Length: 535
Ligand code: NOJ
Image 1 (cartoon, rainbow, N blue to C red):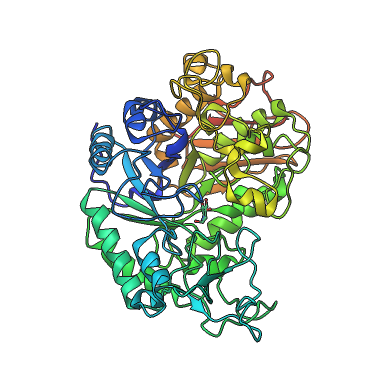
Image 2 (cartoon, helix red, strand yellow):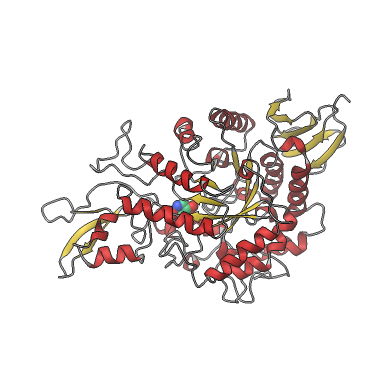
């Protein structure tokens, strides 16, 4: 089944995030690769997803797992070749799956040719493409600002001039290996528009935009002061860039731009989704929301309200490669997520977390908009919090004490012990031996497994008219219960209270996240119902 020419596919797609390092390894080096993804496309077809979002696959020194890009027009040898990427795009399309790639416009790798030239010669024109500034203090040995980086680290690194003397500093909101680009410079804008065309010409259907709100910096480099315009978050100038990107996307049929926009202020968030800007943005409000019926309902209402005002589709995201997997999150007493609140080592009830994750799947797959599935979520994987320190690779670890590697562990495909069919050798991060019950092979055909729940839910979603264009309407429900209809014949009921509740009047049960107790819906369980409609 080839991809359809359906317009606006991104509005209600199920989009599966592939983290290429950890999906499947074909060449036996313990690191996932493009040929591994090609060999396992059948898994995604059977799951029924509409699109893949591919985390960065470009040449990179991997200081930040590929979010430090040295060349946006090629593929890292660890992952394969450009020809292999093109073959994957073609094969995915033939399987009816669209391809979204990740573009990282805020920064490049310190190995990018522009930065190498800028560093080699203080007089080089490439210097202007970055943020080089003299230091403060009599010897210039104090950073130009006291800005705190996105990984909690410092944001400036001092250079050494060719004659060996200390030189200017350069800005990096992330690691020193990720110098920030100067988006005031027209060459930066032109370059990225060209990169978009490069990939759209190769058939890519969408772009995920990394750190989408950080591109511009206040040129006066002011201090961060509460209540004043932030010097590098969400500066108004960024919208002009996305309007230009939208013009590029619109010059091709059915291409989508999807922003990584972490933004607590809903109206500022919605600005990115105006009709001439991005098509969609990740809903982090939902991702970080506690397992709490009142907060969850408020979050859903807030999301739908903000998106309706500008006609943009909502997105529903439970996990990704940056955050603690939600089986683990929902199994803790504190169920929210925040980078500032490190819960590593806090006790987890994995059975409870799994039960809630199953219910959350039926929630996120039946709300209006697009749903994102992070690889392994369909297998019910939990965070691996037992990775030996010497194996950790995430640069966040040294700065915040929390590593994102626990959610980036290679997928278990088959067999009884690591590497569970991921590779022929040990994977780049260790898999918990307990994942023997969570392999694709072990779950296939087991109606009680997470995998079969996801397959059934995505299949029903595809076939159910109410789960596409229809709005949702809340139904009256007992305290702690979320119940809503989509279209006249479909309802979802999620019991977040501590007691079993009676189901609303219905014709048929379509799918339940856990067995029902007669006519009662147990706690932490969701069900999809066919409602009686007048004939
Ligand atoms: C957001 C990405 O999701 C994350 O993995 C990365 O470290 C930062 N942006 C920097 O590119």
